Image 1: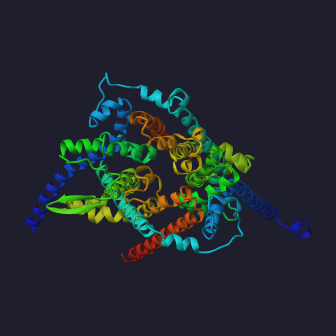
Image 2 (image 1 turned 90 degrees about the horizontal axis):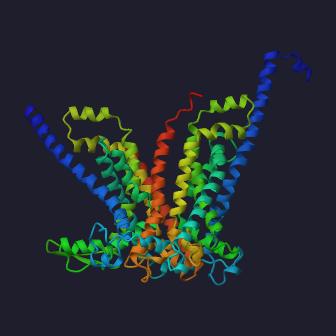
Image 3 (image 1 turned 90 degrees about the vertical axis):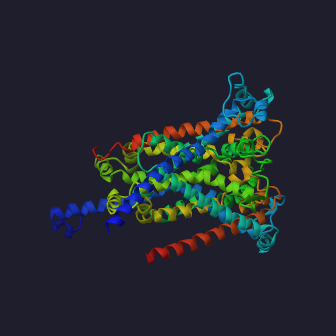
Length: 296
Length: 331
């Protein structure tokens, strides 16, 4: 009995030691795997093409090699010998910011209704919105392509924006609804006794309380719209002046004339806003959610 | 006021008034609710629900991009598209590739996500930063990720082949994204390996393991420490504790993750289109739908194909849920 117990203890300690080492190996490997491609992206964007072709395995850039001109090359308009990414950034910003504004305008009232108000078809509508989240976009691609071709919206940024709003509104309602549910009804009842209508209560009481959720939702929607590729490809591919950054990069990536290093600079430009927003959003969420409402 | 009301006590009258105002508030709420939800509902109806119904209609008609203006709801309906699609060259192969890709990608992403969640379970200095950093592949734009991967894996000037030749002594560069299969020699055995397919599966796992990691971390934090402490006192080793305590607690989360990841990977278009364009034995059904739609302009066939994809997915998911639900009852 004691012998087996002792054996168990020995096995446990050996096992624990192996796992302790293994744990750090796993962490180091995962961090390297997650970060390295992005490090390499930035690195390549600053190296001259000839040196990349000569020594692709190098992991740093020497000061005399350092080439920031790739960025001006990729940003400049085509007339100035660049790739026109400045214009792509403008398009992406227009679509992404537009999507955020419209999606929030429709989904804040919608989420409030779903979480607070009893109306005909409330549960069915919630189920429908959840289902939209799982609809394959490729299934939507076919009819929307035909529809947009027929009504002449294909190639326009507005058309793309509408598709994005439809894709994210359901998710946004789902996210915001959960947050509204955490705000005590008693606060709104107090406002109602003071003579507030439902809409006034939403605007002056619940919305300010839900601000952290609204902000993180806005960031989330922005990131989805900024990163989106399939519909941009489907609708805008023939209209270079309307290309988004994602589409521009993917279309130019196959070309032989444009140096890979210049496109890497474009890749950095595409990635940086999303990563910056992601880190801002993380802080917003943890900071905002801790503020209690029950005290009021 | 009716005479009966006049005889009622003051208290009755007050509750009556309150009830009346409460019911008018209920009616008002119902109206406000409908008004507030209608913009979203309208957008979803026009941009999602009606298009999907229209897909069904298109799938039964002979529609090409050229005669697109003449199509209407009243057309010649037939099942030709479905017959053509299902019997066409490469459809079965595409379906199999889609399945292998989804199962492989889902399993690998969840396995890596679980390893990450376990490794980061106990607090250490800088854990918050490591957590945030591990989410990078998930939040970064897919186009940028795919571009870096194609550059890294390039046979001429890619870092992976450069290191492979220098450090591992590879004789010739490996075309990770453009070779259908390579022979792998292992312990004297030579096995053909679907290179490109494995590479896109690895990419899928790399991009989506953070999602599994997030889910599993959240669930792990809810497991009470007392269970494991008790098991530790009884002499259970770390592996035993994981197998008998942590894993059973995570099982439902893993099941949900499997469904979610499977659905998304099954429908995935972006990753494969950007990495291989559907070549070298990686043509999944969604990429086929896209090329039918744009390159061939055969809208009817594209719609039929997309519907078949959605139907198979629905059958698989329902089947899985049935199976999983039953095992859940047994335990």
